[in-house]
Image (tube, rainbow, N blue to C red; front, side):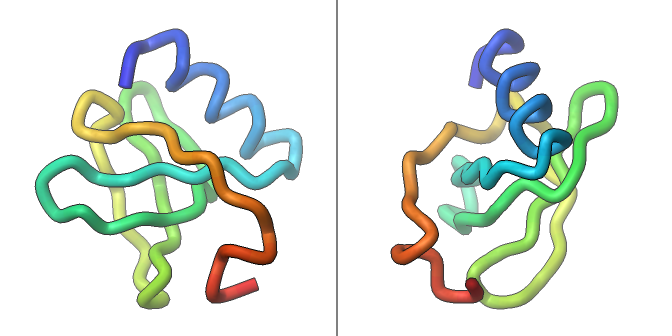
Length: 70
């Protein structure tokens, strides 16, 4: 993910909106809970919290109905 999209995803998450990402190597998907300087804290569909480098992620488009833990 590019830095500009990382900033957008973080703004969405901080505003209380759902922002979804996928980790490149593990293929895990999750909803962004928060962000740090260059990492995303993500809650995965399997119920685990992860911290991922934004460079290793891609933004996903999901509706609330498509997300299993909602």
